[in-house]
Amino acid sequence: MSASPVSSEGAAVVCAPAPKHVAIIMDGNGRWAKARALPRSAGHREGVEAVRRAVEAARDMNLECLTLYSFSTENWRRPAGEVRDLMGLLKQFIVVDLPRLKEEGVCVRIIGDRKNLTADIRALVGKAESETRENTKFTLQIAFNYGGRDEIVRAARAAGEAVRRGNLQPEDINEEIFGAFLDTGAVPEPDLVIRTSGEKRTSNFLIWQAAYAEYVFVDTLWPDFNADVFRAAIEEYCGRERRYGGIGGPS
Image 1 (cartoon, rainbow, N blue to C red):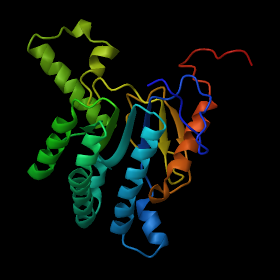
Image 2 (image 1 turned 90 degrees about the vertical axis):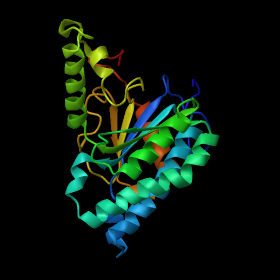
Image 3 (image 1 turned 60 degrees about the vertical axis):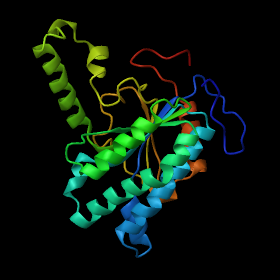
Image 4 (image 1 turned 120 degrees about the vertical axis):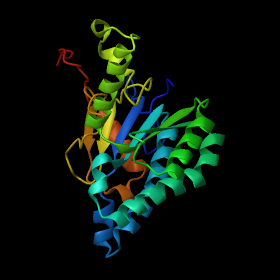
């Protein structure tokens, strides 16, 4: 897609090149609920509504890919009841939203380690991916039971297994070949990573892929995330100069 993102007024943002892939660390559900004297589960439910708004806004802004960090490998340390709620919300999102996503040409990808997921969730994840695999209008990538270090370890094991089987020579491994073993595969690396709730950490998210991404940290709690907040982050990105380790243009 070559069109630029649009501003909150609907006009094109001058941004060349425009971001193609935006990733979001969705943070603040618990604090949103606490501020309203509600259980954390209420914050997570409202967070799903924010996911829907973010997907719609990303498509309206002509992004090619949106990656959402929904459940980390560290989140298993949370109370069992909260983990069950999060698992249930993933299942509900797939069941409810998959028909619409299919119709709108969205390719759904789930990244992360699936071995700890229950059989019903693995089946739903497989269904979402298989039924949208041929869609090309937009890619929605959900990081679930995902950790950047864990992903790199699993990729290293897979590369090592390819070497053991004789399908790959160690001296041939470079960044491009190793990157193909990562969960993200052929999806372009993120141009921009947004983190909500005012926290300023990367939290083990896409640590290989986001090596040269721009980061924007916003104070908005995830359940309050909307198109205006999204567009403001895009506009901040548009005002930056990406140097990739080189020297920028004339000042």
